Amino acid sequence: MRMQEIREMSREEKLKKLNELENELLRLRTLVRSGGALENPGQLRAVRKDIARVKLALREEGYRV
Image (cartoon, rainbow, N blue to C red):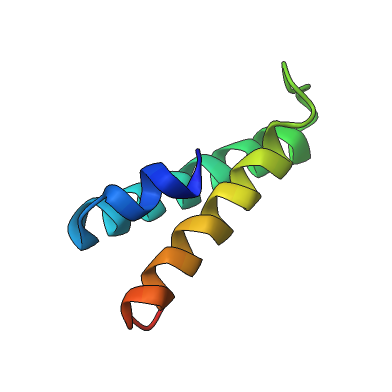
């Protein structure tokens, strides 16, 4: 995701996206810890970065995360 896309979202959309990304991160971490292999090893990092971008955009609006 790009910051431009995130900034264009409404607050509710950002919060929904944040929730989806956190669930995805939890799923990926569970998969790795159970011994499974990820299709794309960089996927964990990308999800973490997307979470950080959404949180930054929310903080820019004055919303406490």
